[in-house]
Length: 343
Ligand code: NAD
Ligand code: 89V
Image (cartoon, rainbow, N blue to C red):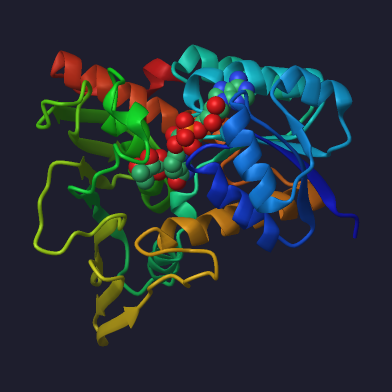
């Protein structure tokens, strides 16, 4: 089977994980990299032995010689870079959040559809192995028909030192982190009809909100609560674990801190250790996220080879991004907001 050659744009904080992930991915390798910052370009190029280096994405595409592009830049550049890739007919992965606005996100999905190129959003949290273990347990029917759920991420981890831009945007936790938790809620409980949200800023040194609580009315009749905080000081810091509570007609499921999956059914309670693998290049506590990077990248290559739409395609991700938009509107207006308003 031919190896898919990739180019990566954006050699910053998170891209290093993606570069490690590509080394593990069966059937793909990165042949060129691009960053407008020459120091970052040099650091990643030297660490991963990539000699084709560009400070301009236009020059990268003009030279070509790759089968897909992995865009790991921050959100403002996502639309122009995805549209550039579409013009060159190159299948594209784009980091989350897909775009700053729904209008941009829709334009990106349309540009790729018109060009006939696949677009996947790097929405990796649903690829975390503890989340997949929970989904498998729900799908097994052990807890019966689900009627209620909670997806929770509460922490006081200093995310600002690695990603200083998180402290400066008008929007923060829903757009950056809540987006993952909202996607997990869709993954576990299905699409959403309406959202009711409340936000708060606790840390006075940042611009955006660092606490958010969303209540989702899922189309299947499930109610879920998605809550996230970077202002929650706990005795043992849980970053970056997403915790779950799911109630069903025959039992309950809990994914608790320390990667413990509890499935309580009529047959008793089963507790499983679902701690993610520590890949050779990974470092706790990030290993959960790092493993999911490898898994989503393998999924991309498998989909490219099979001509299949990725699970977190641009088209699919519009429904997650609509939950972000609906949450901000709900919090601003103090009202329940139909998700349809954004789709
Ligand atoms: P960063 O600022 O550390 O890195 C971004 C890099 O992109 C910088 O080196 C910058 O010079 C480069 N860049 C920006 N615009 C460019 C352009 N037009 N052409 C070439 N290079 C350009 O940011 P980061 O923390 O690595 O975040 C990058 C993206 O990854 C963001 O969208 C963020 O939300 C996302 N992210 C995702 C996860 C996850 O788990 N999925 C985790 C962290 C960050
Ligand atoms: O996933 C993310 O986008 C990261 C982090 C996990 C630190 O919030 O910003």
